[in-house]
Length: 518
Image (cartoon, rainbow, N blue to C red; front, side):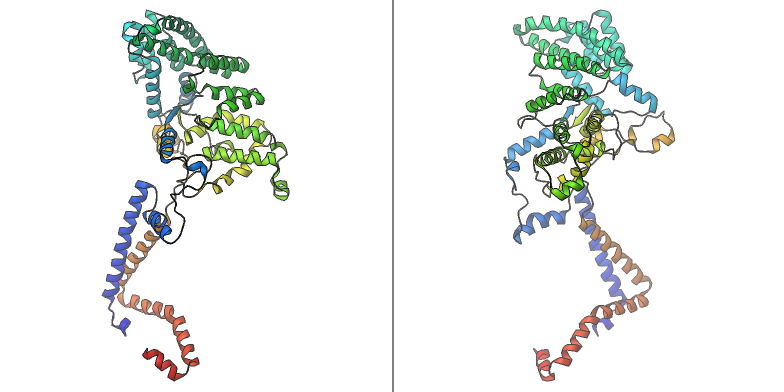
């Protein structure tokens, strides 16, 4: 009787109100997800309702590796979100610009080049540059945005005297081949060593001379490192290894250049795995910041011992041996540190030129590592097959949600934003390229963890759409929708009516009468 007395206006009002409420929930959920990266309803359920219902508090540490104190966690999070200079960055004139000439695409973003300009001003200038005319010119040159203006300023400085930083700029940006860059760096080395010796004698005469000596030291280390990289690129790998070792012995405290990563790559090229292990033993330390080069090179050496005979079918039958278990654990460790690398090593995703700066544990670091080390993984028989069979198992070991880590600190949430600034995308195409080339995406940034829409957003979106459609149909076809509503309710309550009829037939009529009165 109650259903028969309801008018179509009631159904319109009911469905319209439901659609409005679910729409408001959908808008709020979408806004909260875009701002904080998680569902509000899911967060409330996990953080507040689950502990009340007897679940495990998601904020409590689950293993000793993650219980090192809030201050340590925050400090590590800040260091992991820091942008670092790429130790293996290419030469801008001889490599990056050649790519632009061939493809019409800019391999470097404005943000990346601006960071390089800041590095150059930090390493190659000091407060006393105005005392030497050539250094004063170069101080302005490093601040120039126009490449041609920088090159012209470097030539102007060289007309006054042999200026090491002027040679550096020309070797980096004007030289079109590695051989030409090496020639300019050798000239820079001659000028830089003279400045270094003079400032070394005067460094204790005051803060001004100390700043000059610090600047001359940075210049000399930079030149020697780039000369070693030139030798590596020109095929003189043993010479490059000797230069890097000598440089690390001469300046052991200048770890900011990460010269050991250049050394590891050169030793892998020589297949000198014993020396690679010795370098890893020194730098794969808990007190030093990790990198993809350290973690994945350690995994490669462990995989090398077992990969040539590894078979997933045989391993599933007999189980993993101790050496195979060590290799798998090393791969899991590397993948947890940077989960973007395997897809580039397995060629599931195309490579681009690495940027001049990288974000540790980010897509930019993965590209920089795979660009130089893919050949070393291919050289070890079966290493890529072992990686392919085991790398995805890492994600079953990482606690969920990602506020916790397994072997490292939790994966930082800042990597996606920084990588989008460091890596070129569609908007960084040059105007000269064709319309067809501009239509495709230059690089799609790898995101971990992949942010999928939470269930509650999908549910409220479906509920909102469904109730809105019901309201519209009820308004347009009230009689027909009334028939459908009655038929739907009759079908819905049919099992209940059937059960009630069976109960009435089984129970005595007097007992059933007393129950209904109750």
